[in-house]
Amino acid sequence: MRSQVVQSKTPKRRSEWAKLPIALKVGSFLILLILLMVLASALNPTNPNATTPNRLAPIFAEGHPLGTDILGRDTLARVLAGAQNALYVGLIAVGIGLSVGLLLGVLAGYFGGWLDQILSVFLETLYALPALLIALLFAAIFNPGVTTSMVAIGLAAVPAFARVARASVLSVKALPYIEAARALGMGNVRIMLRHVLPNIIGPLVVQASLAFAVAILAEAALSYLGLGTQPPNPSWGRMLREAQSYQELTPYPVIFPGLAIGLAVLGFNLLGDGLRDYLDPRKRS
Amino acid sequence: MSRAFRLETLDPRLLTMFAYTVRRLGFALVTLWLATLLVFGALLLIPGNPAQAILGIDATPADLEALEARLGLDKPPAERYLNWLGGVLRGDLGQSIRYETSISQLILARLGITLPIVVASLLLATLIAVPLGILAARRAGSPVDLGVSMASLVGIVLPSFWVGLMFIYIFIVWLKLPLPTSFPIGGWENPERALAALVLPVLTVGLASASFLVRLVRGSVLEVLSQDYVRTARSKGLSERMVVYKHALRNASLPVVTVLGLEFAQLLIATVVVETVFGIPGLGSLSLLAISARDYPLVQGVVLVIAAFIVFMNLLVDLLYALLDPRVSYA
Image 1 (tube, helix red, strand yellow):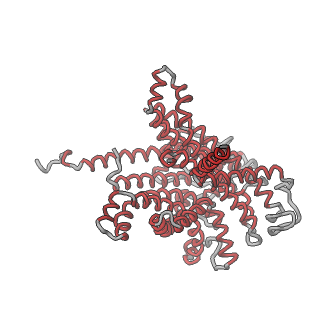
Image 2: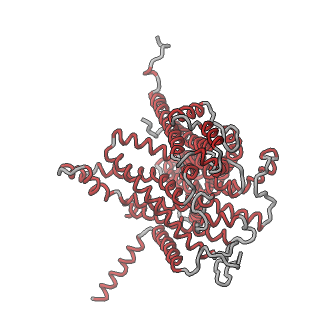
Image 3: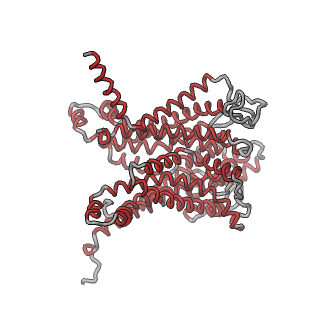
């Protein structure tokens, strides 16, 4: 009897896991890897900004598994610290995009009418301006730096979040339970917070994951242009900018930060795609 | 009587199309106007005195006053905006502080380098993505399809500037190909050198665009292949080649054309980074120079021109879409 119970349970569990989209599994694994990089950076005794006399060391050099750059700084320590920077910038930028976009999208979708019209025109305009363009404008006005780039990337993400939120609110708004809530005499704010918001979280999480990938790429690009993270702070894009000038001497300080960017972007892209498939009831059956 | 213009004799489709065009055009104009407000308004946010920021702390009061007058800082913002807007409408974006020349001329010269890169990259992307996308869709689920999907994913997640750096390393440092790593000083006066300098940038941007495009081509061909009329075409005995190229491809091309149009405008700004990798004096490096020199009028000009390109391409794509696809509702 007992073995039967165990047997019937194990395959069921395995099938639950097997049912998850492969993109979701690989994406989660890669993001776990990035988180481990952040943890390793925190525990790493090597200071990523410390210069040593051992300059341009090749990979597998003693004490420097990924070699060193032209100032003798440990590439591994800098790539690990770059993960911290990328996650930090991504979190703030996505946080700005999500909170502003959600607010505008829910207002536009819930109330409709002239408010919707005005917000739509405003958001379409913002949509016409790519993140990099907004960041260029910001960098000209305020001092280029990590805060400026985070705000610019976040602002550029607002329209996409607002669009997703608005569309989800429109589809939820038409459902009978919202009518029921209104018939019970609930106010707009309460309906929005208690009944609309919890039901539009899925698409927003998907969008957040995809926006995270975009934010990491944008931050790397801005830092590469010298408009993002400022020296000596390690950022993947900044490392590429510095290593470019001596890349014929050693390619490793160029190779590893680029691979790290690719890994992080791949992770968040796959997670977003996988979540979308997982949350889509048409694909789940 | 019969020659008189009568509204009801017009094709009603034409009328709705006309109304749609007018409305869409109006929307584009409003968007552009908002963009000018944004670009101009952003400069009002500059902390402190812009003239001081441009000249630095060592500037003499006389120099400061002269620059303030030149920037029109002695006038109220509304008047400055209207003056600037009036100039923009006449195609005059003002004078650059750093270069002391007309901003419109500067931007036009830089577009002469950036636009060829963008157009050639899109061409390359189409040549790669369309055949590969069709191949992947026709053999969906096969190892070929998987390979194409994997390759496109790699192209999407890797930053284009890193790929550019790798290309420099592989093609120039390793294989020692005789390609210049910077654009010739004289620009297009030396066409052979200039073209050689653009090979790697176009390859970099083109491959990145192809990675996006191939997914789209595959998706739309796959969708069309599952339609009823494709089944009909097959069941009436048409060869697979005819089905794919005559029926499926024609209908699958619409979303692809759309994305190509949007990608064109996006690439204008995306090439900023790749231009930096390859030392190309295009629109991107102009904007970076303008930022580091705090040449505010020049920054305004570049941002506005790129935004205008994007708005215009969006408009064009929307109108083309409505024109080409009778199923699109534009009521």
